[in-house]
Amino acid sequence: MSGLKLPRASHTVALASLVAFGTQVAFALLMLRLFSPQEVGEFSVLSQIGFFWMTLALAQAPLSLLANAHTPANQALRQAWRSSVRRGLALLPVAALAVWLSDLALWPALLWVLLLAFFQMGNLLSQSHSLRVGSAWQQAAVRVLPPLTAALFALTTAWLWHMDSALVIAAILGYVVGAAWLVPVFWHSAEAPQPSASQQATAASPNQSDTRSAALRMAHTLADALLATALVVVWQRLYGAQETGWMTALLRVLGFVPAVVHMAWAQVVLAQTKSHKHQIATIWLGLTAWGAVLGLGGVCALALNWQWLDPRWQGVWPYIVPLVLWQGSACLSAAFSHRPFQAHAAARYSWACMLLALLQALVLLLPLALSARMDAAVHMMAFATVSSLGLVGLTVWMARLR
Image 1 (cartoon, one colour):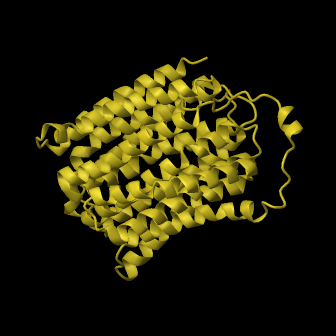
Image 2: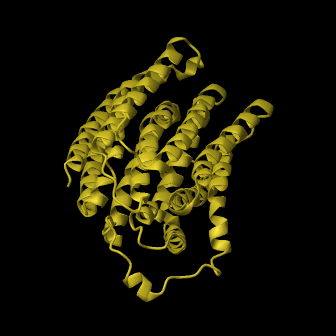
Image 3: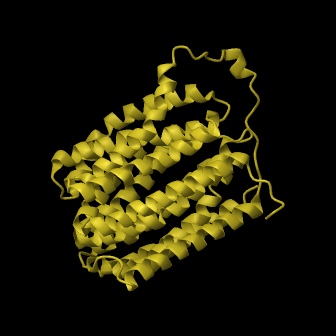
């Protein structure tokens, strides 16, 4: 790979993402060490519902902001923020319904969910915006500071005094730091010159674009958000907060690897003004990330075997293999996720992702449909197997796009 030239911004974002990844892992281990499975499970439910609300409100706006590079960055950001806030307010009853279905008290759970969603939305938009117009240190800081803030707050409260809802407050503070990077854009919005219609008409045609309709983007977002939220809510309802804590804590550690691949490679390639084609590098990145997931799974197994964790966390054992399989496959898919936008196949990509989400949902909801209780380990292995096969198939299709 020494002869391959990667986008320069990829190095900065990759390093920042790795630092953020290390902080996320430390935060997850901190939860295992200093908080009970019950507390971790409840926090996971709240954060997932907030993620669900935020994802629907954004409707993949950060990705479109990168893919549609022909639109001025500040203008695109302000439009994305306003439309996302409007969608978020309209979806407030959906968020309340998700909290009610999770069996958590509606108050203050709904408040926590809305704060998590609102500031996480700003955090994600600021990351995409920084890729287009930010300096190297801005691109790094917007990724590193939020998880660092959350980890430091959680560590401080765990050591000095035990605070109710410490984990969710820590997460909110981290997202506040990330969203704060948007303030200068809105503060100077009145002074920012807007391109004329003639300038926009004579702009060069982009090599890549997100040509999906708003309805298709919303449907794709809804499918992803429903699946991610259903996984946590269904696990909570079928197997309780303790099993949910075991599953989500490990998923938080392993799931950050494909997120790093998406941020440090796929998003960076889309943020470039010209299309970058590094097929071999993409393959190696995906395989290397899969190896990293496997290594993290081994570290978790050693931590359990050496009894570094509290004995209450021994229930994580059955989740290691299926989650490593699932998230390793997700790394391959994330590495190639920029290809549909470069090949003008974004619509087909959305339909393929929605079909996979439907198959995953069928496996997830199978015990509820049959009114039969399934062993949690068997259920997760079935879900992970279907997910992995679908992601590998999606990766092969994206890799073959011209």
